[in-house]
Image (cartoon, rainbow, N blue to C red; front, side, top):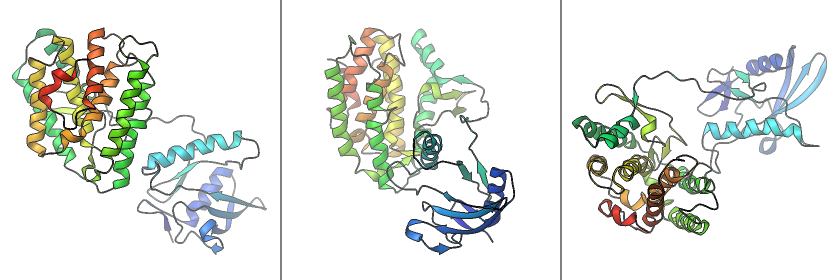
Length: 371
């Protein structure tokens, strides 16, 4: 009879465990008994009611020799363990590193429980990959390139802008109640390697467009924002996580597909809104050196459409550090090496100045672009 191993995810049986070990050691295995260690020490036949996160001792016989191993899992929860991918990353690292440290307990294999109740080995993996479908179409940034280069805004451009805002409104309408996860996402906004601190560390120390002291000031202000935002867990929503023009492919009319969802399926909706809006600002700076004209029309249309659909009265009280992050990314010479000095400086001015606005006012962007 199958008994639960992973809560709400999988069932595992003695037979499946026996098959896994036989395949791993390329020989017939006979499981003698299992026992939960730690809090469950002494419980025999521990596959029944085995708790996720508890080590499981397995005593078995292989080729006439008695052996014992420990099966380890990680309990879901805080401290960066919320997602299955988080826990997989830890176990993969442990499997790779345990055997390189003298006197450390040895790793035998790293594996996974399947939804069907079997166990598969990952021990011979060197790298992982993701296989996706192919999507035809044109990247949305090509629309923005055309608008910048021709100075013309088509009716379809406005319709697509509205469609993107309404798409975000739709996905953001799905909420989740998990205060710890929201707090984590806000913490990651500031401290993650791909977010504010990681991007700041990619800047050269001798940049002519911002000093190290200026970057340090931005970082300190973002820490203050973390403490303002992390208690607003009721805002936790389904998000894309990297909603910019290079991750959107349009076909005819308003038919589009999004690519490369990043950093978790739940987060702060202001992240997605700021990401797209910042790119309208970015193209405006390339076009006119300030937010005016056709790209201001797109900026206004996008924000007004989103707000009219969501009625999010707190958006402009939380969006500031997300604007900062996206400006830091675009102004970075690592990601955008060929920007003019004026564009780079104005983005960084906005990144710094927006953090000092308690309620963001979209009509005051011009002031925030100045030193």
